[in-house]
Amino acid sequence: MSTILVGIKRVIDYSVRVRVKPDGSGVVTDGVKMSINPFDEIALEEALRIKERGIVNEVIAVGIGPADAQQQLRSALAMGADRAVLVQVDGGAVAPLTAARVFLKLAQKHQPLLVILGKQAIDDDNGQTGQMLAALWDRPQATFASKLELDGNRARVTREVDTGLESIEIDLPAVVTTDLRLNEPRYIKLPDIMKAKKKPLDTTTLAELGVEAAAQSPRAVKFTPPPVRSRGIMVKTVDELVGALKQRGVI
Image (tube, rainbow, N blue to C red; front, side, top):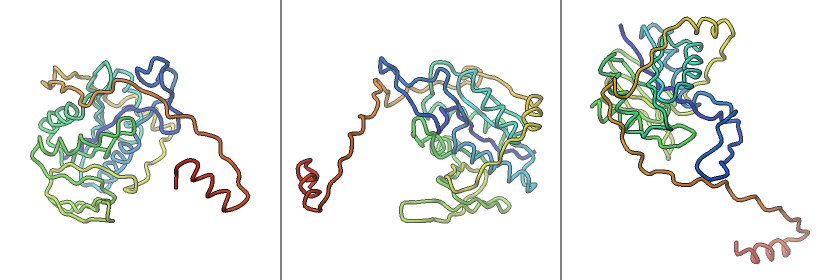
């Protein structure tokens, strides 16, 4: 049975205005809406489309985080994933290297055709897990994918790079990380939410997988909110504008 592994990370919803805790130790999460990382949602949608074309038989959603992350995995199951695995880790986000080691263990167990991950998470913006996994797994990688086509044992990937678009071919199995323009995730319907409750969701730990947690580097020591935006001023002439800019040291 051919399989695709998809990473699902629990993050503060992108529409929520993030607030810093009074003591600067982190951001407020109590009572805050949590969602699937947007890039991971795109990764899952792509995996589901590949399955619907009959190329693979199964899509497995994998989350790493606290017990509450089951909520996002249930959303992934409602979207169409066949089953889910939660690697339960308490005490904050894991380092990208730890996440890569987790996916390596699961890749060795399930022998997937693809591991599809979001190119980055919107909370820490590390963008490293996919590349680290490819190195540990010793398989090809295609990052920042905006188009993905499978042809037998090869994949053609269009990548978004600084100078435009780059097209590459890689052998399968491989690791692919998704960019925003790859697809638009489907809307979850109520009947699918009900069906997701009956789909299997297994829970394991780093120790059970034989994964040693890597130290976070760099480590966040303090959080501060951005400075309050100063009030704008109105000017009547170009000379007045230039004078105001010179006074502020802009020109």
